[in-house]
Image 1: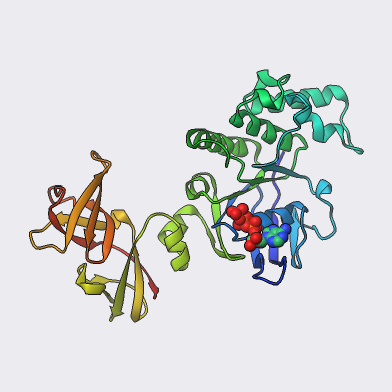
Image 2: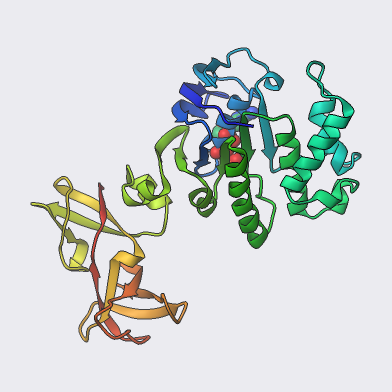
Length: 345
Ligand SMILES: Nc1ncnc2c1ncn2[C@@H]1O[C@H](COP(=O)(O)OP(=O)(O)OP(=O)(O)O)[C@@H](O)[C@H]1O
């Protein structure tokens, strides 16, 4: 198995008179890359995945997989493996038959039965459930079912794997284990993978690059680090990671915070009213007898303690200044921003 590149150019899709589900989306995915489509509900993630898979069509624009234009190419001829959250296994078939299904129904290039059996067993051991081939789906846990769904998707040796919230129904710890395992598996087989999720931890943890979607467009496409460090706009800055928001005015390269809540901060931003996004680790709190804030909570207590402080302009997540003693609950304190991302308000 090896991955192919995917080229999406100016794809648009509209389902009715309202806003477009996709409004001019372009994205280049490299062979073997793991890309996450991340965005709020209704931003167009699933629609884009369905168009890639040939389950829906674009009204405009083009999709090429492995350099081949997909216009008019039916889903089953695209060489794509799918795993959807709701993509139930065939309940009347055991695990072996579920995984073998895509090979057995082939009209052309159907491998002989012995080869199918060998391939199915290899896949079941790859997804680490070799001993379950005679079980039926309702005799499996949710995580085991998703592994079978993955084995079934991989059985046809696709060059592209499309995953739509594959772990959505699982509890938090199983989700975490399975996504790390999936990333390892993806590296092992080298298959180009596109994962739809609305869980930013999931996207940031497994993907080489993340496409943040908003209202049918790609707000930003980049590595997890680049998105956190250099968000393209206020939406991405607010959507990814935690951030305190404060209004400010930028004058001569210095941000002056509303109500002088924090000391002025040198910034590189256009003049005028702006919204500052300050990550908790960039906001230092220290005890100050006449400080405008009050320490309300420490969470969790112990190493890496985060502080919650409140003041006239709401509540902020901060960390204790390293050069000062940890403030006590109820004590007045002052805040200082070490860095901020600034966007016009
Ligand atoms: N078959 C359809 N008919 C009408 N509208 C649709 C259809 N499919 C999607 N839409 C609309 O297109 C927009 C994008 O939907 P899509 O399912 O792609 O979003 P999403 O980002 O995957 O959301 P979620 O995270 O909730 O699954 C939404 O406004 C949705 O209501």
